[in-house]
Image (cartoon, rainbow, N blue to C red; front, side):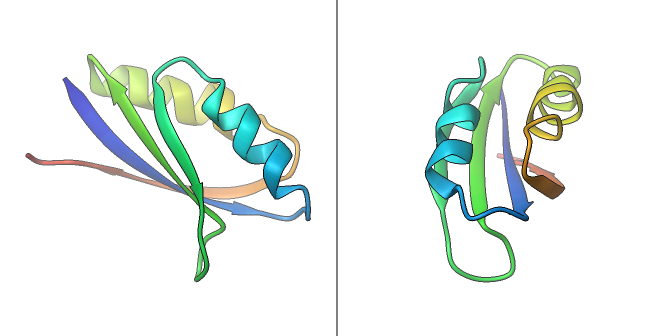
Length: 76
């Protein structure tokens, strides 16, 4: 099992919509609206690192309003 955390910056005031769209993605365990340098922290639980890439590159970054992402894969 691979656990990753995606830091998401958004350029829209529609935080609830973005959170809902991210939570609906297969492999996403949770999405949280946060204060600080990023707007969301999204936790992903999947089988392979390639699946993390797929979720980020093909799905999260494709959501209207997502400006930037940074992905961190858990080492434990």
